[in-house]
Image 1 (cartoon, rainbow over the protein chains, first blue to last red):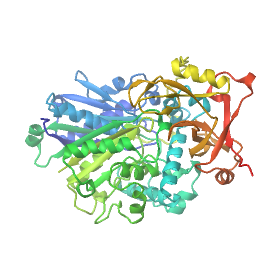
Image 2: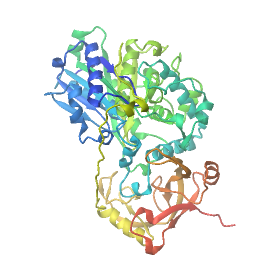
Image 3: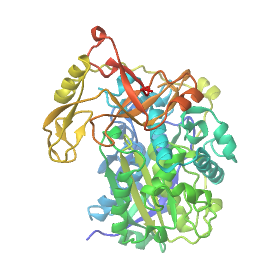
Image 4: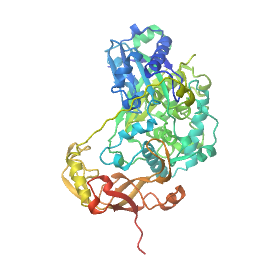
Length: 390
Length: 171
């Protein structure tokens, strides 16, 4: 029987297109803030988990080891969690099983990304995720897979571009209230603004893409007895799930993320959730591109296939909804920024703050007892899910 | 609450102290058992797939093992160089995020003879030079055909197929 695991503290840095700080310095600031909130010293941390995405961004081989000092890992059991964009949520899953297993009582989970170092643009680093034999010789770029998937999703469900643009409108507006939001990302945009923005790779428009970001995030998790000793109101990790699909991404029907569904089912089962649409009260699905939020809400079984866009039009996912499920109240990757691994953990932190009632202006209107954060990554391939509750 | 971080805009960044490194790494990848045969096939103008007798799938890219059944695959099958578009995009961006005037049109194409949803990534050609033209000329589900390099110029690479172009319906 797994021991219960709680989240005790969280830390974030500002989200920035380019930070003066190094990755280690960013990691340290986020970790220090999380420890302060948990009222813990680094000596009370039994083990450290760190999420950080491609080594290529930093040009440092095995950068997880290089960054570890900034994550407080010196002379501690340390593990790097790495499933591309899914890493931020994978890290808390990783931390969860280190504590749930009974091996450790406390774990510091740190996620960091410094994307700005790659020249001329970090997008170039992503080319190496494509198959080197049959895909890279075609002159690929990262935008291709997203635009291809978005086109397939829109085609199968006959989703108008205007509806996808509404995701950007919602998240960029929510992001205005996030204290860490990247300069120039959030704002009061209209559907027309989004559709009039530059076509980068049709159907993807400029305002449907999350930016390049430097930032770090951290949380402290502990066993039940440590948590109860330190706080009256712990936030519990109720369920975790993850799943990896085949890397033959052109051999799957891209309209639906089956692997996200499998990850969600695993987490729901662990949390004893029978009807997620009633039992999940706030959700942070991964939204590096506007359509991805809708795609993931369907994979998470929070909407029937093809129904997430219709619910969006009705305001079901709005932050101030009374009877819907607020989705990306933080502003998400579109409204706050996308420091790959740190973005996923930012989403976990948003659910944590919402459950504590400490999300400030971003606090959702409806009552929340349980929330879900999800990330996604690798080659359109991995789903990572965590469910938190009061 | 105070959130740490020192954002730099591009002007400030130019003034800050930076250290530069240009990594130069080179690789040569062995193509393996399945893809070597596949690429030999391309040289001859053939597109080869691999069939698994257990699940019945005809797979492209071909592999010597079936990742679903986790057993060796059984047979080489030649596909037609024609197929249907499963999805496509009209891309105005290069790998380094610089922009291009004339778009590229990547597509996932299911070739005739391959199993359902069994697509490969390639590009479309002869479909227009602007977004409007491409959107007018290309539809999901549309039939396309490979345009090959001249036989002498083929080198056993995916680029031996230059692109796929729409199949004109016979009247």
